Length: 312
Image (tube, rainbow, N blue to C red; front, side):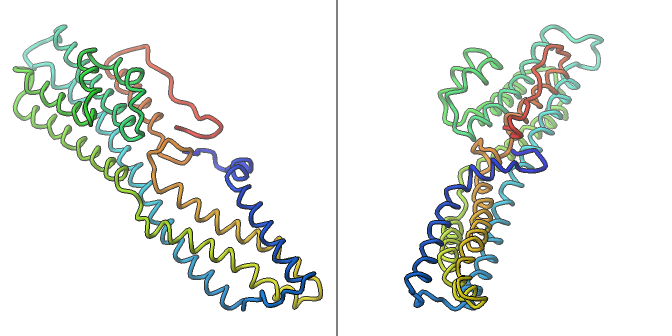
């Protein structure tokens, strides 16, 4: 996710220079054909071009709004994951010491740590699952689990879902540590985390409707193709030779439209680990810091820092 207030011009140029070069070449070609070669039949009534432009603007605006809603929902889901991870840890630490005991036994401390670290494994496994990065399991998830459990889970189709199942089984096997009410509360937390995972998977596995995305791109390029044809005669009305002004103004307007289209396109899939996507790595690190400090650990990793204004 890009976190700087202003986007550096180099970032904009890196994503648009090819389009600008194409627009410049196309508009120069039409200007040469219209002027020196006198191909005046290239004229297209400006009223027609403006109608197409207005229609395309509304359509692209609708598509971009829908794309942003996908990103916004994805970020809200991960906000819920952050909050549920904290509440899970607080409930685990608060419920695993029976009221009739003054101190927590070593076995209870180990059980607390197991439940909390499995929660850390779940958030990181979900991140890798959404980004389709199974090759990073051993480095980023396995250290948080028992070696045998980590090896077994890695072979399964949906490791995050299996981790939530393991949490449920661990609660059921912890006889005497929880009352029925406490057990029900913890299971409700797991159910909510399952819903959050399902919401993320729905966004990941359901592509933005292609009829909207593809049509939007086609309409934008159609308008870009018509734009200089409508401007040539309009600028020539200002005086002989003014048709050359079509080139800079057409390039500028074309760049604006293609950039608007691009903004919507890059928001369609918020879990691809690109510069404008949900910063799941940073969120997972934030969760890890919070939960390990709740366990009383002093040696915790540092927060993820942005790279060139981008937080991953």
